[in-house]
Image 1 (cartoon, rainbow, N blue to C red):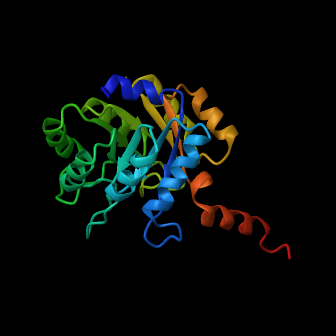
Image 2 (image 1 turned 90 degrees about the vertical axis):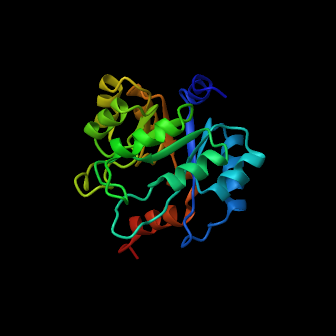
Length: 231
């Protein structure tokens, strides 16, 4: 699909994040593929997935655009979402529709800024669709200026300088829709249909919802915390 085709396919749609880290009970490419299949049957317009293995398994049974990431931790570096060219190369090789990466102000593992890193990425893969995972409006603006096709609110609340931000960050969504000049993806802290509707009403291109749909351990914890001390 062309860039325009991919963007059109997800426009106005719910994208379901199907991820489980190694220390989580559902960590399995097979299980994530079934999560993605269930999301597709439920009406999702796209999937967000972590790792080449999960993406390959999801692509076998789900015919939806996929936002792909590789979560990798490098010693001494806070950036872990598609942090180096190694992860970008791997995602391109598996044919994922959109590649998302951390686009915060924090340095990459080699010390470069996101602008320096993405300049090399864009030169190497001019036709690939890239999404910037940002934590504040300023980062989204910089990401749009340096050539990202999409900007997302993914990292709001997850950087030291945005910790404590109320989520979903509707103000960030609204600001990026008005100012960035590129399609905006709402992501982070969308826990109910009302949150999703409000996010879409800000004018975003699409929205990603993950934990409340695909992470039963975390969902259970929220319910248990709600009744703790009442017994």
